[in-house]
Length: 99
Image (cartoon, rainbow, N blue to C red; front, top):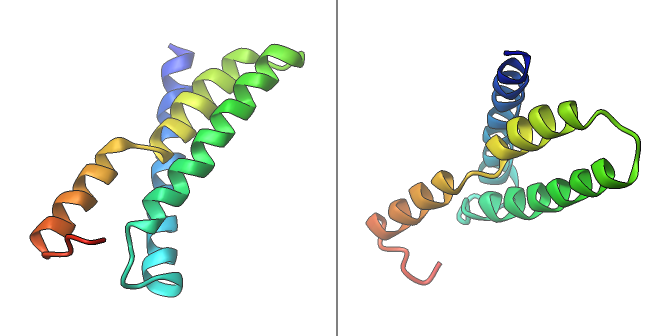
Protein backbone atom coordinates (compact mmCIF):
# COMPACT_ATOMS: atom_id res chain seq x y z
CA UNK A 1 0.00 0.00 0.00
CA UNK A 2 2.87 2.36 0.76
CA UNK A 3 4.28 1.76 -2.75
CA UNK A 4 1.01 2.96 -4.31
CA UNK A 5 1.29 6.17 -2.31
CA UNK A 6 4.89 6.65 -3.48
CA UNK A 7 3.85 6.21 -7.13
CA UNK A 8 0.86 8.55 -6.74
CA UNK A 9 2.87 11.35 -5.14
CA UNK A 10 5.74 10.89 -7.59
CA UNK A 11 3.32 10.82 -10.52
CA UNK A 12 1.75 14.12 -9.55
CA UNK A 13 5.20 15.71 -9.26
CA UNK A 14 6.32 14.29 -12.62
CA UNK A 15 3.17 15.42 -14.42
CA UNK A 16 3.53 18.91 -12.97
CA UNK A 17 7.19 19.08 -14.01
CA UNK A 18 6.29 17.96 -17.51
CA UNK A 19 3.61 20.63 -17.83
CA UNK A 20 6.03 23.25 -16.49
CA UNK A 21 8.64 22.22 -19.10
CA UNK A 22 5.97 22.48 -21.81
CA UNK A 23 5.04 26.00 -20.69
CA UNK A 24 8.66 27.16 -20.53
CA UNK A 25 9.44 25.82 -24.01
CA UNK A 26 6.22 27.16 -25.51
CA UNK A 27 6.34 30.57 -23.85
CA UNK A 28 10.02 31.46 -23.60
CA UNK A 29 12.29 29.21 -25.62
CA UNK A 30 10.65 27.94 -28.82
CA UNK A 31 7.08 29.24 -29.23
CA UNK A 32 6.66 27.76 -32.73
CA UNK A 33 8.27 24.43 -31.90
CA UNK A 34 6.41 23.29 -28.79
CA UNK A 35 7.18 19.64 -29.54
CA UNK A 36 10.80 20.24 -28.49
CA UNK A 37 9.66 20.13 -24.88
CA UNK A 38 8.60 16.51 -25.40
CA UNK A 39 11.96 15.67 -26.93
CA UNK A 40 13.75 17.40 -24.05
CA UNK A 41 11.82 15.70 -21.25
CA UNK A 42 12.09 12.28 -22.87
CA UNK A 43 15.86 12.58 -23.30
CA UNK A 44 16.41 13.94 -19.78
CA UNK A 45 13.95 11.50 -18.22
CA UNK A 46 15.41 8.48 -19.98
CA UNK A 47 18.90 9.46 -18.88
CA UNK A 48 17.74 9.88 -15.29
CA UNK A 49 15.93 6.54 -15.32
CA UNK A 50 19.15 4.85 -16.44
CA UNK A 51 21.12 6.78 -13.84
CA UNK A 52 18.83 5.77 -10.98
CA UNK A 53 18.76 2.14 -12.08
CA UNK A 54 22.57 2.20 -12.01
CA UNK A 55 22.47 3.82 -8.55
CA UNK A 56 20.18 1.07 -7.28
CA UNK A 57 22.60 -1.59 -8.49
CA UNK A 58 25.88 -0.01 -7.36
CA UNK A 59 25.04 1.95 -4.21
CA UNK A 60 23.40 0.98 -0.98
CA UNK A 61 20.33 3.15 -1.45
CA UNK A 62 16.70 2.37 -0.72
CA UNK A 63 15.64 0.62 -3.90
CA UNK A 64 11.95 0.82 -2.96
CA UNK A 65 12.01 4.62 -2.83
CA UNK A 66 14.05 4.96 -6.02
CA UNK A 67 12.02 2.38 -7.92
CA UNK A 68 8.50 3.41 -6.93
CA UNK A 69 8.81 7.14 -6.24
CA UNK A 70 11.53 8.34 -8.60
CA UNK A 71 11.50 5.91 -11.54
CA UNK A 72 7.86 4.80 -11.80
CA UNK A 73 6.23 7.87 -10.22
CA UNK A 74 8.18 11.00 -11.08
CA UNK A 75 10.09 9.94 -14.19
CA UNK A 76 7.37 7.63 -15.51
CA UNK A 77 4.92 10.51 -15.41
CA UNK A 78 7.53 12.95 -16.70
CA UNK A 79 8.32 10.87 -19.82
CA UNK A 80 4.98 9.78 -21.21
CA UNK A 81 4.34 8.62 -24.72
CA UNK A 82 0.80 10.01 -24.62
CA UNK A 83 2.07 13.58 -24.85
CA UNK A 84 4.08 12.67 -27.93
CA UNK A 85 0.94 11.19 -29.48
CA UNK A 86 -1.14 14.23 -28.61
CA UNK A 87 1.42 16.64 -30.07
CA UNK A 88 1.78 14.53 -33.23
CA UNK A 89 -1.98 14.62 -33.87
CA UNK A 90 -2.07 18.34 -33.05
CA UNK A 91 0.68 19.06 -35.59
CA UNK A 92 -1.13 16.97 -38.24
CA UNK A 93 -4.35 18.87 -37.66
CA UNK A 94 -2.42 22.16 -37.87
CA UNK A 95 -0.88 21.01 -41.18
CA UNK A 96 2.66 21.25 -39.80
CA UNK A 97 3.83 18.18 -41.69
CA UNK A 98 7.54 19.03 -41.87
CA UNK A 99 7.89 19.66 -38.16
